[in-house]
Structures are given as C-alpha cells and as structure tokens.
Length: 392
Image (cartoon, rainbow, N blue to C red; front, side, top):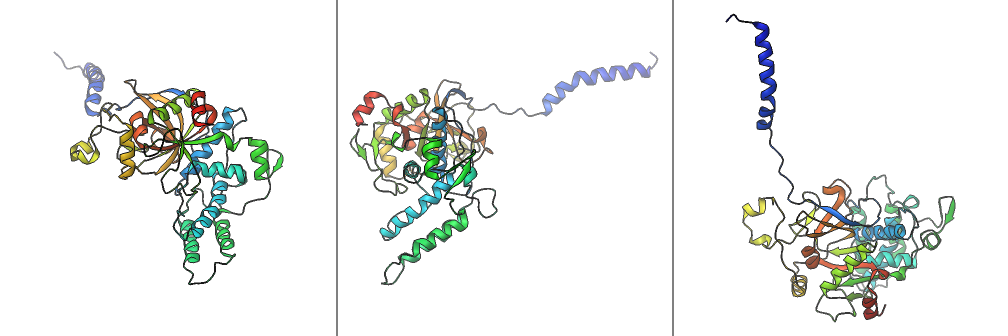
C-alpha cells in the first residue's frame, strides 16, 4: 500500500485521543476517600469563626460566641462582641486574687465560661468595633509579651521583703494592660447611639447573666447538687457547677441543640486523636495511643474506627490520673452524623478558618463522654424535671 501522509496523521490523532484517558488515569494517583463523611443534622444559628491566635483566651472566645448565638436565638440581631474587653476587665481581678492568695492561685491566661458571665453581670460588654484590644499595630492577638510583663509585676509584689503592699501596684498593673490592649473607653458610639459598657449590655444586647448555668459530671461529688470543679482555671473559687451523671449531661446537650440552644464546651484537647488541622475530628479509639505500634500510629484510618464505651468511672479515673486535663473551651453549635449514622457534635473553634472544615470540629460521643470537664447552657434549655431536681 502506498504511504499516505494525511491518513497517517489522522490515524495517529485518533489513537492518541483514545489512549489519553487511559494514560492519564494510570499516571494520576487518586486521592484516598475520607474516612469520615459528616452530614449536619441540627445547626444552631451562630456567628462566624474568629481567631484567638497566640493567646490563652479560648474561655472568652467560646463564651462570647455563645452569647452572640444567644442574641441571634432571641431575635436581637447579629453582634460582634469584644473578647478583649472581657479579658481586660478580668486580668485585674485575677491579679488581686493572686496577690491576696500570696501567689498560691492561678494568674495565667486561662479561665472558665463563668468569667465572661461575671463580666456581663458586673461590668457590661462592648462591641468589637469599640474595643479590639489590638493596640500596638498587630493584626492578630499575641499576648506572649504582655503575659510575661503582667506575671513579673504580680510576682514583684509578692517578693517584697517584709514591707507592706502599697496601693499603687494595681495601678501599675492596669497601666501595663492599657499599654498592650488599649484604654477602656467610658463611652462609645454604636449604630448612632452612645453607650457605656453597662448600658450596651442592658439595652442593646439585653442578655441576663442569671440565665446561664454550668454543669459537670464526676462521681467524686453528689449528683444533682453544686460542686467545686477541681481544675486550675477555675480560679474564682466560688464558682459552682451542677453535677450530673454523664448520661444526663449528654442528654442536656442533645436537648439544647435540638431546641435551638447552643452550648459552651470545656475539656481536654491534648489527645493524639484530636486534630483541628489535619483531620478535623476528635475520637476515642478502642486502642490507646501508647499501645499502638509505630505503623498503627502512622496509618490513617480508611473508615470510621471503633471507639471505646465510656462510663462514669472512666471519667473520674482519667481526671484523677491527669490523662484528662482541662485545656480548651469551644462552642457546640450543632449535631452531625457520619456515614454509619454515628452521632457527632459540630463544634466551632477559635483558631481561625485556616483549618480542616474551615475552623469547625466534629467530636464523637465517646470523646465527649470521656473528655468533657464542664458545660455552660441557658437554664431554659434544661428539661423541666431536671430544673426541678436542681432547684433552678
């Protein structure tokens, strides 16, 4: 057959087009399907994810987010409240407590949900636009240097040699806070009106501090009564938590979310199977991390893993041996389920959106049951019979 250049070119083109998909498929590495596929079942109205960045103020971000969600639930509109106003108002109280206790108290960045509610009650609140706390040209919060300076001031008062404590040390302490976070304005303009922090909380926001209660679950204390939660960041000493069996504590969250209420969560986030960046989930696998081989630790699950059955005794045991620690507060805003139907809590974190699931986390029921140290809820979200039993 006589060679036909045109026919040869046409055949080559057709064959190359036919082979291209196969070659492409062979050359490409398909991404592994995710081990978990989450579907939101219930989601409470809430405000966008924020970033606490280099601060230990999760207690404030989580609870302020909770109050913003409360305002949305009550039809008061969307608020962007100032976390740093609460932080600025709380530090002097913490310093006074530290000095009065001769240094035998917590004076670091941590706190609890009631610290925000206490400021709502005694000082009011402010919008973010009136007080950002970004006073030294930073775009994100970074309290490392400020905390070191504040600690040095408080310790200097404690290290006096036989002399009296002067009334001036707290002025110096407040001055350092003003230098880093900015002076607190006595009044500010917001949406065409002038407010004080007190009038803003009462008139614009309109939330009642007495509506909020904290709950825990440890068998070292009587159930259905108030108890002291024995964690370092519970620095106010007079803060009481209602103690419930873990089944009932879990039921409180389910009922709240199903009724349109959100929840402040406090607990342990130091576990190897808790990740906000890489996986976006928190689990309690049957096999403990220290019992896994190196290969098991490095292998990513291809499907949902089997988790432990968590009971009340496990909670107390892990708190007592420090395998459960009080690390972080976040905001529970919804219920979800994975592809097997297993229930998860959808949680808003305060580490910005540059994380898995845009800054949200999915926490399994076993993780919640084992690693939760405390919750805050609106008491109206509690079942009537439980409120009666607690006397609230």
